Image (tube, rainbow, N blue to C red; front, side, top):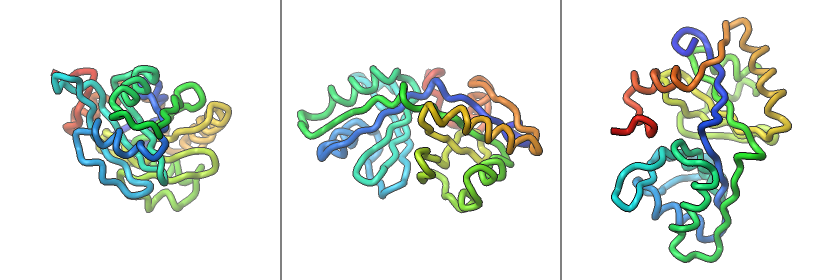
Length: 201
């Protein structure tokens, strides 16, 4: 389905936090292995390292006006919050909000993923550049993915996520939409030379 139609995945292995405050930029810039140069609605793909410079998390940093949303593979939400706070450089104007309990992350991948999503969100999704995102209602749509096909991650409040998943499944029927698990996503990512924090080394 990922290679020939469209596939929907529940991304429970990805934790998510929102970092806010005047010291948010400095704190995250010190944590990222890449320079944190982002305009509003842009996404940076980077890593977090431990004290020995070993990768401990695969990270998307998403700039949402003056705030930052982190989508992280390799840590729990609690670990991520503690990690950001511990490396904040002493900045006092910093808040790290764990979004794991209030939000769910769904992922849509495949050559026809954009058509499925356009049925739910609207045709404007077609023009969304890779590594950017936009708001629709109370949901965020990230144009990302590591499968080599069209990929979108949808961060929705828990009370909205079930209806959103149903809408995507219904819209995907004509494209033979299937459910893809994490091993399938990892195999496609490997095919396209993406780093995998769970198989590092």
